[in-house]
Structure formats: structure tokens, C-alpha cells
Amino acid sequence: MSGTDSPVEPPPSTWAFPRADSADANGVVGMGADVDPSTLLTAYRSGLFPMPVEPGGPMVWWSPDPRGVLEVDNLRVSRSMRRSLDRYEIRIDTAFPEVMVACADPTRERGWIDERITGAYTDLHRLGWAHSVETWDERGLAGGLYGVAIGGLFAGESMFHHRTDASKVALHALVTLMGANPGGPTPHRLVDVLWCTPHLAR
Image (cartoon, rainbow, N blue to C red; front, side, top):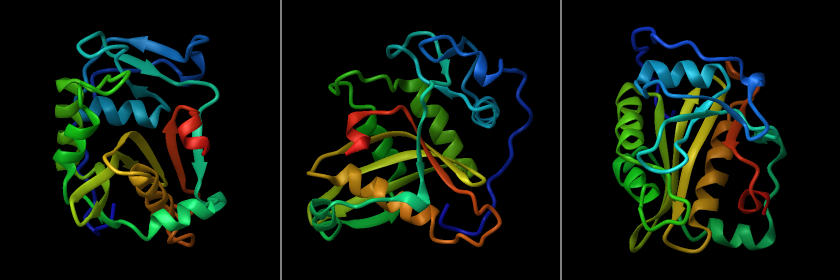
């Protein structure tokens, strides 16, 4: 995301997904399939994302309506958030495994990230598709997020924080980074946060 190397395209997936607009009222498009890199990229390019209902359960493929999407040109920053921005250092892809572990913490409420997900996105990271945006302070890793970058889209999968506003600062950094080159090859840039949640609305 921050470098110049192009991600490595894996061999084509053996899976074909239904259309994103075929989702049911809960946003479910289908169940099953694997989470190989090629399958995940096919899903994202089809407007879908994976999330088991519970760790270890069947893989569910989602396309909720409404979808949580942030346009990088419409970022608003509150006064309290501006103060938080000065508290943390932003780093990209320096602690991807640690971010995954923190997001997968089994003590988190409504946790869903299991070993399949951790392994799958680690593979995508090695291929150059998955990235972490991290917030650091003098005590270490304070928060962050991970997701998948495809063209002008970043699909944010999960975030965590150990300190106040640390995940929000990471999201702000991501949106700022995505909008830093409006004249580039992919000028229409969006951050897909998957779900519309009160946390993101703030």
C-alpha cells in the first residue's frame, strides 16, 4: 500500500460467487468455499467479504445493504479527534501479525476471527494485498486495523485499540493516505468498512 511493488496475483480461484445484489435481508450471499488468496480476491472484486457467524463456524459471504463506505474526500475530524491525532505515531505494515493477533483476541465481544481468517490474511499480506495501519506510542502498539487493498478500494476487515482513540486514529490515517494522491491512476478512492456501526459514525 505504501510501497511501489505490485502485489502478486495468485492462480485463479476455482470458486464462483453469486452476485452481491442477491444477498438476503441479513446481507448473506452464500456459505462455504475456502479462504485461499484467490478466493478472497475473487470475493472482494465481486463486492463480497467473508465472516463466519462464530469462530470455527461455516464461512459466510456477505454484502450488506446499507454498506459502510467512507469517501476519502468527505473526511470530517472532530475537535477531540484532532487532539488524539497528536498522541500517536502512524506506521504501515510494520506489525501485521501483531495487529491480526490483537483483532483476533478471543475475549473481544462478538469476536469472529479464527485461525482460518488469521492464516488467510497473513497469506494475502505476504502476496502484497493485505496491509496493516498501526498506531504507536511510547508504550508500543496502541491500536490499528488491517484489510485488503484492491485498486482504489481498501476493504477494512477489523480494528482494535489498547488506548483511547487509537483505532480511530488508524482509520483516519488510512483515509488520509487513500486520498493523498487524487490525481493518481485510481482517483476514485473508497474505504469499505463493511458495516454501518455507531463506532464509525462517531
